Every structure is written in structure tokens, then in C-alpha cells.
Amino acid sequence: MDKKHHIAIYTTASIPWLTGTSINPLFRAAYLAKYGEQKVTLVIPSLPLKDQEHVFPSGIKFNSHLEQEKCVRQWVEERTGFASNFSIRFYPGKVIRLSAATQDLPRSLVCNVHGVNPKFLQIGMKTIGKQQNDNQAFSKGVYYIGKMLWSKGYKELLRLLRDHQKELAGLEIDLYGSGEDSAQIEVSFKKLELAVRVHPARDHADPLFHNYKVLLNPSTTDVVCTTTAEALAMGKIVVCANHPSNEFFMQFQNCRTYDDGEGFVKATLLALSDEPAPLTDKQRHELSWEAATERFLKSAQLDVVPTKKISKTSSRSFLSTSLSLTRKFEDASASVHFMGTGFLSSQPDEEQCKELGLAIPSKKKGFSSGRWI
Image 1 (cartoon, rainbow, N blue to C red):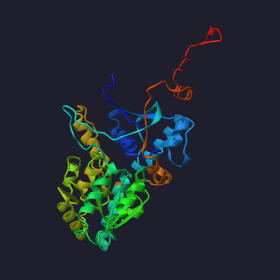
Image 2 (image 1 turned 90 degrees about the vertical axis):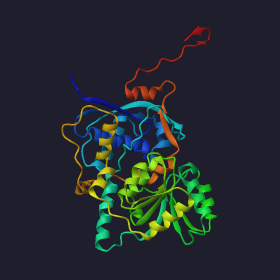
Image 3 (image 1 turned 60 degrees about the vertical axis):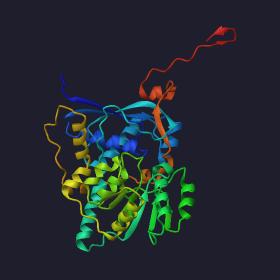
Image 4 (image 1 turned 45 degrees about the horizontal axis):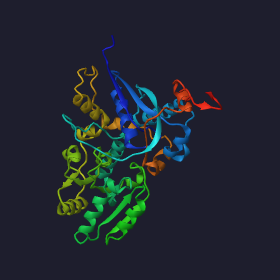
């Protein structure tokens, strides 16, 4: 009998929708299956055509789940640099509105089991080269990037800046994001005496961000903290709250935490005056999906350890990542951030049943014209 572990990863979103709920499970599946020691299946939603237009950017649509699977594999293979060795299965889904929520569970274990897209480590390597050559890697100061929802850190950031405008006099900050709270957020930040510029959402790997030195991330609701990890991988200083969700990042010298408003001011001003410390090979590995996979297997207490040990990926290997896939996914992803997919609470429609090979549900019987139909 096959003694390999069978790991099924269920998620409620999928490429080409670019959100953590689609990207992180996809990378996890790729790296878990990389050496063939586990059988991995990624289970993602299949949306009817009428719902795809609400979720997928730039009018992208798939007439079959096979078309979408091809897109998913191309996306992850161009970013990891190796062929995907996992199965993809679809379940019928529909579009719903989502709200963020976390909860404490008995005997739960908290562990950071996410890595960063290899392209951020590639950017970090280029940054080190600039620092070593002319020490002019960072020509810009402070920024924040995130979906423009008050719950995504903007409320905390506004309060910190408003309460300490005098101490932070002269500070310039750029905000990047899109979302349903965009208008309110822009108006509120424009009322500050500080120079705050608000910009539409952009992919965090966009060259626009390469020269920023400091990321402010006051959010305590995004427990995955993808943005913080990406900024650290690019070689930046991150100023974030002393919070359990940031505990993993505190091992990095470029992570500066604060406990209160005064600490925020001190950490921000010091970060602007300092130069980021170049990441070591070990630190780069800790941010990679290889290391995240190791942590996942250990946390899950899986007894079968891959015979071919997951090795620490050398810095140069990250440079082979292909970034040739069209950028239209990245550019438009934030505009639909508030939409999601979920398991159907009712029967899938006839279109989905035909597409996924499911039995077409029989029509409900009723009484009409004096006879049962």
C-alpha cells in the first residue's frame, strides 16, 4: 500500500484572483509536493461564468475548469521555477461577501507556516547589491500598502499619526491601496498636518516600491502578515506593533516593534535614520516557502520525513524565478478584494454540474394544470 501522507488543502479562492486566500494555499501545495514525499491535492472553487466577472480581474473568464487549472499551474510554476507536482480538484462555488474573523481554539498551535513569493527574495538580493556598491538603495522614506478597509490597519495608523503630529513633523508617507473605504480613508488622512499621499493599489513587487526604506504596518488583524514578510524579504525596515501576530518577525533585525504611541514615534524616526541590515542566508531561508514547509510538517507532526531533505535554497536560485506572466492579474486584483467564494449552501446549478461531472439535480416536482410534473 502507498504509505505516503495524503494532504488535501481546501481554500475559498483561486488564481487569477490575487488574494492571500488563493496565493498562500497554492504555494503551500507546490512546496509540499515538490519532492514527491506527500500526495497533495489542492481543492479550489469553480465559479459559474456569471460569478467569475465579479471576482476575476480584467474580464478574465474560463469556459472550463481545465482552462482555469492551466492558468493556476502556469502562475505558480513561473514564480517557483519548478513544475507543480500536485493534483487540483474543483468544488462548485458561488460569490459571497466575506468578513474577517479569527478565534482561539482549545489545544491550538500558533506557527507561521507561510513563505513569500520568491520574487521578493530576488528583489532583496538586488537591494543588497546596491547597498554594497554605493549605499544608495533607498531613495524614498515611509509607505504603507494594504486593502483600503479601516480594519486593515488604517484606523490604527490614522490614530498614531494624528496623536503624534508634532513629534513626527516633516514626516512624509505614501499609502497604497484600493477598497470600499478608500474615499473615507483618503479624506481622513488629508486632514492631518503631515504630508500623506494616497495612491491606488499596486502589486507590492512593483519597482515603484523597491526604493522605499520603511514600511509602517500597524495592523493587528492580518494574522498572516504577508505584507510584513514581503517587505523584510525585500530588505526593508518594518515598524509594526508588539503583537502575537508579529512574533515570528521579531527574529529579524529589520523588524522594529512598539508598544504604544511614544514607541511608535521613536521606532519610526530611528528607522528613517538607520540603514536596513542586509539579510543573511539563514534569514532569507526563514522567509522562503521551503522553510515554511518545514515548519508546517513539524507543526502537523507528520511522521514521514522526506528522504530527500528540503535544502536551504541558495540565494542565487531565487534569481531564476520567471516573472513573464502578464501583470494584469496584479494590477486589478485589489478592486474586487471584498468578494469571495464559498461552499454552496444549495445545489449547484446545471452549468456547474456539467462542468464538474456531477449528477444534474432533478427538477422539483410540482402540481400544474391538473397534473403532477
